[in-house]
Length: 200
Image (cartoon, rainbow, N blue to C red; front, side, top):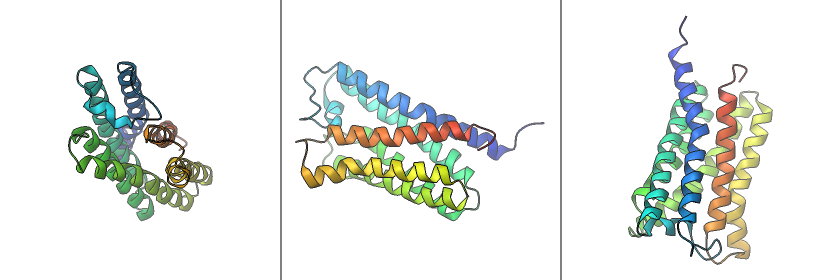
């Protein structure tokens, strides 16, 4: 007997949530390796997107591909999973908005000012907001452990920016960008794996 269509979509979304961060970080770190003058303290990650040659291609492709995969995770995975839960669906839509902003970062690089700045801020704002809303979705679904993990990751995604604006601990934004994106990526991979489990 074949699986229900919704479950098939959910599995596609879950797999996309696992693969998306791998694509992103492999491409970002490889792009950094091709650009020896990159500085974690003095650059933004997006600076890689306007370096001529393979560096920009790697970086922008990584964001584009991972953004598309993350959008699949948001819509086919999260949105499908939450069914009639409006709290979960709203969180899923906001997370999808963050993934669209991620795609836009790759399309509108630093040469497209102020669009690049706007979509960058949108990504790093929508992602933690989505996690906080999804926390309530999981809580109302009686998944208290996942809710606690989700809110912790939401704090972890927001904290590098809060500390930056409070203490200005680095002159540029590569470190808070990396830490915030890493927190969201760990969550997506964890949740993607859980969603593939029949006990989820």
